[in-house]
Each structure stands twice: as C-alpha cells, then as structure tokens.
Image (cartoon, rainbow, N blue to C red; front, side, top):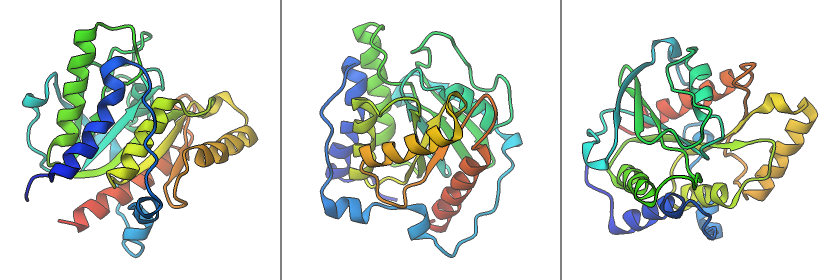
Length: 251
C-alpha cells in the first residue's frame, strides 16, 4: 500500500489546528461535490451484513506519546475524537462493558497520549481531547505533533467517531473537526454524549439541530448515547461493526 499523497497530507494537517493553540479556527466548508461524495457506511456497503464483534474482549494494548512511536497499522482502526470534557473515556468504558479500561479523570485535558485498545486485529484509538487551553504551550505542541502524526500516516481508518455534547450547540472546534472529516473523505459518525441529561424529545430535537448546524450529508450516522445509562451503545456498536466490515471488504 502506498503512502498518502501530498494533497492528503495537507488536508489531514488541518485536523490538528485545534491542538496548536487551544482555540477555534475558522471552519472549512467543503464544496458541494465533496459533501455529495462523502463516504457513508450505508452507501458504500448496502448489501454487506456486518458481523457483531465481542466488545467484552477489548483490552488495553499500549500508549504513545509521540507520533514516531506509533506502530504500523495492522488492521481496521476506530478512532474516537472530541473535546476534552465530552465524556470520551466514560463512553469507551461503557462501550466495552468495563469500569476502568479507559482512564476517567475529573480534570479535562488528562488524556495526553494516543491510547490503543485491541480485540483481534481491530484497534480502538483514543485520541487526546481537544480544546483544553490550560496546559503549557509545549504540551499543546506535543499534542499537535501526536495527532498530526497519526492522521498523516498510511493507516486503515475504518471509522472516526466524533463526539459532541448533545446539551449544547457544536463549538467552532467541533465544526472544524467535522469539516476536516468531510474534506478528507474519512468514514465517520457523530456520537452525541450525555443524552441522559435531556428528555427523549429534547434529545431528538438537539440531534436534528446539530445535523443542520454541522451540514451533515443525510447518511452520516448520528447516535445519541448515555455512558451513565448505557443507552445508544448497541446502536453505536452496530455502526462500528458495519465500519469494520467495510474496511475488511476494502482489503
């Protein structure tokens, strides 16, 4: 498999702007042709039925503090990205039916490494949370290098799960992330966290509002979840299973 093109590298570097300074950047709005042609799991593999993996077998593999430490991609990778206080670690623990597999901290910005979890040849990648300004400039620079290094590599990106707090409109940083995923033509879904904080009707209204705000193509999955109650986890697992099947079908 050949390495990414120069154009791919330029696109992926834009994904790391939020790590450099801990503040928003202007969202790139992709052209209509890119939006129309964005890969979606249902469009690319409508007839392929995904087998469900056993999420109880997921184990911590290792962590990396610099991109030069990253090992080559050996199988489909499901990456999780979001703001530092979006509840990513709690979601991973609930997704894998564990209590402490992913470290949960009361202090935002504590995930300062890329953490890999594994089940068979599938990797789950916990990316550092973005948007937390109360760290040193050198630490933000290290995060930037780490994330840029990850996306610049020739890896088997099966799915990027972009986490957004359902209680609020998407931030500029969230919009930047989604714009990057669309422009880079990466398979992705939106995971709306903390659904237990709102009523069911309010969750549905917020889900629709966020889809409009983010200008999502109609077939990009949006999954409402609650790490506290476990709601939405089966739906998220189904999206991941389909992504893994699609990635394995491209081999």
